[in-house]
Amino acid sequence: MIKHKRLGLLIGLAVATFIFVFGGAIVPAHAAKTVTIGINGSDHRQWNPAEKTLAKEGIKLKFVTFSDYNQPNTALVNGDVDLNAFQTKYFFDDWKKTHKAKLSAIGKTVIAPLALYSSKHTKVSQIKKGDTIIIANDVTDEGRALTLLQNAGLIKIKNKTLPTVHDITQNKLNLKIKEVDASQTAHSLGDVSAAVINSGVATDAKLNHKEALYTEQINKKSKPYINIIAARTEDKNNTTYKKVVQAFQQEATKKAIQKIFKGAATAAWDIKLK
Image (cartoon, rainbow, N blue to C red):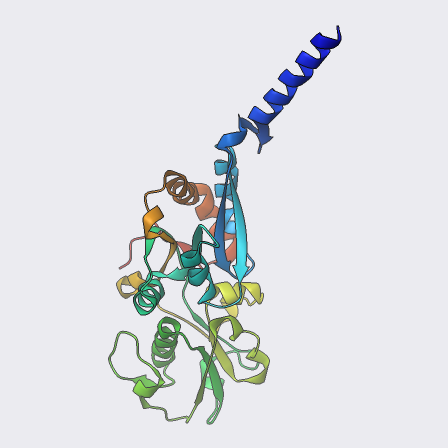
């Protein structure tokens, strides 16, 4: 009798080792996988539909939050995360070239226009002579921000894809353009006239997209500013990572993006830009 009990216990332990319940699905323990994704900003609710889909296949997503725009790519190169999802294709290509990094874009996520926010003004015409406007200091967001300020009628710049502050040709209001890390643009909003802030930072700061003084125009020139999921080049054909991209690019994610960002970001994997 004792031998039979021991045998039953051993069988039970073996079964427990082989299977477990994950998100409502029973999967082999050895098949369970965790994919770590580096993000910038704390809000990853748009990934909820993908998490539910992937759980059925025994894939769990773990998110690691970084505080600036360089850390997620460095972490990816070093193998501290499996993927990252925080940057535009333009920023990615520039960073990869500058750092000679072997990284690849494996999927599109959203396109999120920059916007000019203010805690002091309700329209662009209220910005006064000598006021300070904050913009991000990375090459991509700086160029986009300056183009936005030109389109808003505040400055004029040279006709370049990504201008810098040195390309300002007209500044009638003698505005002071202050450059800070993109993650800090919202924090100083109360101390300046206005700030050009990207969607993720604005969402974290609970800024209302509809109350922005001016919003970046989205058209066919915006293609480089579509956000992407990145992997190490050696892993670009990884079957699990492809499943992560596919799970994100579903109709339920589109609805989540619309609900969460309320127009401040749009699903971009099948968007048609005019």
